[in-house]
Image (cartoon, rainbow, N blue to C red; front, side):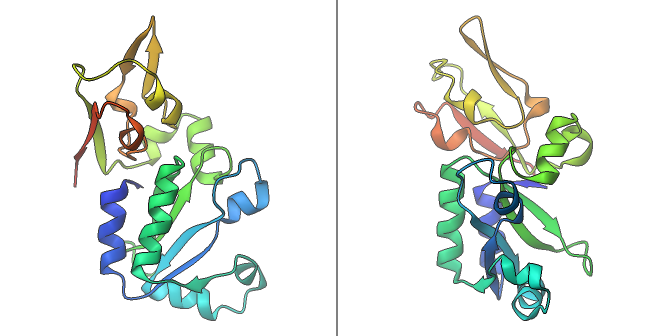
Length: 186
């Protein structure tokens, strides 16, 4: 599921234990300079990462963080245009136990989904963006930030395809005229 900042705040607030570690995708591929320490696990998954004997897990440097530190990492990740992706646990498919802040150039799941046009079939949106055309100045900032291709400038005018929006909110946070807002679906 694709999350936005409001969604991740609720997950962080409800967690009893949080760990953070390096993004395995960015650490391995190194295609961009986005922050590396952005993958979070919660509660049982956090405990598993801290107590794991797996050398690969240790190579990503999992360590506990506070709720405030988690929110700061997520805030900075949003600012640089990373997408918050939620993953459920193997033991409890109803509970989100991991949030990764992903880029489309390094993230293997997200990059593959986008490259092969599978987003509508594999991703679930938590929100949709809504445009106020009276405020839009067609600057294209949102186009540059949209990983899903929902926004394009055509003949000098913004065209928005809501069916391609997954509600990540990276367009909202940088719109200079506040012409974009999010409509939560859940």
